[in-house]
Length: 109
Image 1 (cartoon, rainbow, N blue to C red):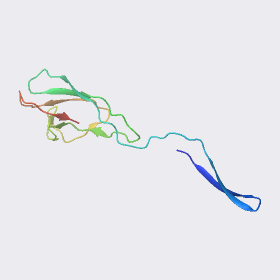
Image 2: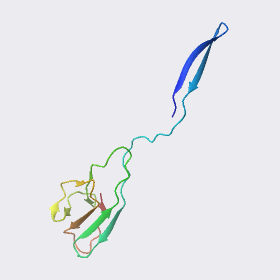
Image 3: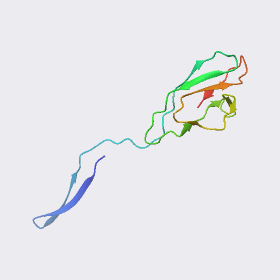
Image 4: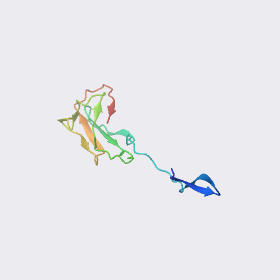
């Protein structure tokens, strides 16, 4: 990115247009945060799993919080409570319980 200054001067009796420009610099545009990396860290009980994620890398737009999704839906039990609330941006781990034993689920946040 740079800024150009356009100006006109007389070369004898003829006007001449010219330009001078500032130094260039790089600028990263505002964008959505990158998705965090998610992994299961504890599966001691048959009906629950503790998941952990890395904090999202932010690009000028801060992360407001996280919501855990199970099979694409937010109607999952998190620590025995309905998952209606968004977890704070400082949170990076939670436990999902009341799972059916032996069933494969997809966890997203």
